[in-house]
Amino acid sequence: MADNPYSAPNTVSERATVETTDPAIAGKIKNACLGGVIFAGIMLWAGIVALVHRHNVLGLDAWALLDSAIILGLTYGVYRKSRVCALLLCASFIAFKIVMLKATGDVGAIIPALLFLYLLAQGVDGTFQYHERKVPPNPALRWSVQQRPLAPLSSPR
Image 1: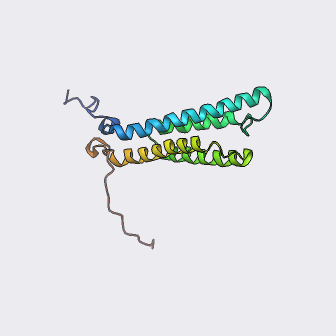
Image 2: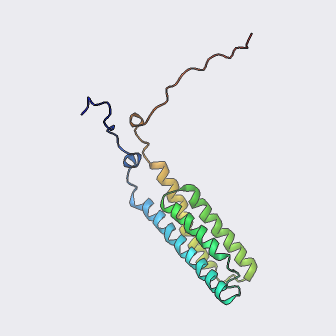
Image 3: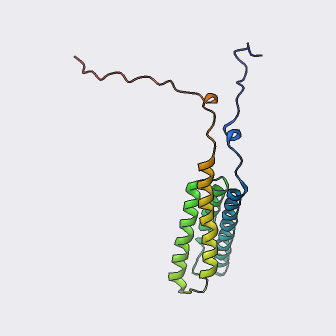
């Protein structure tokens, strides 16, 4: 088989070269996903109630349905260990809480908000720790571009 030039290369996929994360990092990411799903569920509930009854719930209208879809997308990104999605999910929660505080003026929900913020911040920390400890793929298994020295710049004459 090794003599056949048309045989498939014997390579390992890039995902197989990533070490399994330790349980602490996986737990942080899992908790952030749980917080994101609950956050999206609250937004979905408020959007459906606002759509059906035609009045605002928790200061939200039917546009909360779109917000919940975006939050679910970001939560899926955190599940896939995306640092950008973790940061955007945390920032969107902070923005949501600021808007809610201005709309309702109710400070009583600050304890649950701090709990959600803690979970989402743990997700940010977990995704960054995951990418710090990720083993880079074997460079021998990747296609490489040959390094060529740059030709000296010469003016056309």
